[in-house]
Image 1 (tube, one colour):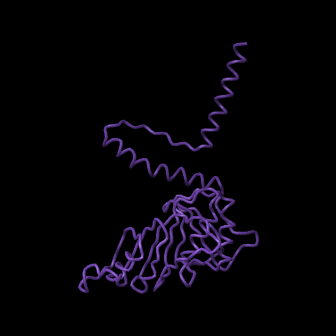
Image 2 (cartoon, one colour; image 1 turned 30 degrees about the vertical axis):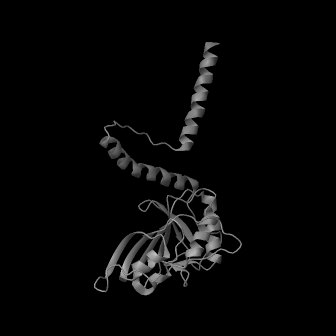
Image 3 (spheres, helix red, strand yellow; image 1 turned 45 degrees about the vertical axis):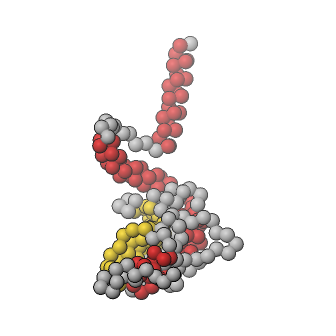
Length: 235
């Protein structure tokens, strides 16, 4: 099927934010995009090569792809004047290999990204060094300087990956589990205002206390100690 021309030759798309679910959708977007700033969400891998040189800046948001099979396809992102930005959202604990597979599958021909971010990241600190090493071994790089490392970015709500030609002798610096847990608490607090507004809209009075699972476990132990003290007191 020939690409759908959205509105004819008189229209020039310069900015787009939305979802693209098929290669035909990407071709339709390419038919009107010229030096465009594109922010694309993909629920599943999509071939975006049709965008070619129509894009000036490309930001792609996706979730970790399923684990690779014996012969996994790739979907290289186009890169023009700038390499793409890639955001892999909701990486669960234990799935660093799926994250690496996602990034390498979407890497442009130059294998360079302006920015690699893991929003809402639930990986453990110990999973970040092998993730960085795997990506580096695959030739993935990010713009910038300094050592290969991972850092928490509270403003973006995720973990930023920096992959360069330099690796410290002791391995890349990564956030501790404590710092990652603090990031998760910060993300929960960021979501509370929206939840409060929604409950208020429905006439529900709300009062929240945000706690981590470690804090709840500590309270359970403390409660058990108090209960034991009461039993000894009764005796």
